[in-house]
Image (tube, rainbow, N blue to C red):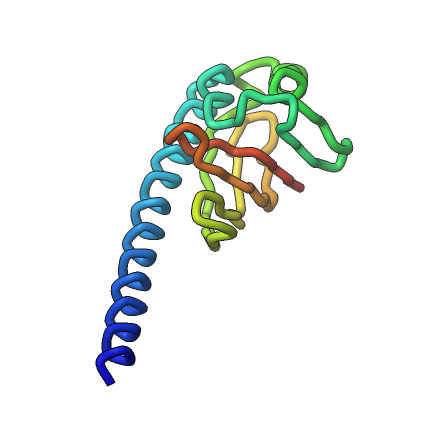
Length: 143
């Protein structure tokens, strides 16, 4: 009986700890996304890219195909959004932030870009991972 009680206590304690970690992770991830949204809306692509993993292994997938690497992804953004008129004001709705492992999550959401040259709307999926204590986007797909 003592073993069952101890096992139940440890399981409950572990689950509670995990839930607290998940809540903390989600708060930290949302901070990164908010900072990124503000940077986009201020036409600061360099700061916007801070949220991405600065690695050749970063993956960005859109209707134009797969882009690999941080520098190529940044180059794609600079070409596709050359001026503040192109970036406009970004808003989004996060539909789910779901754990994959202890230090990675996938995020499902919808974005809306309001701009004079025509609004843009779509959906996205991000995979984020804690790297050296910072949450970074390691994969991004968007429509």
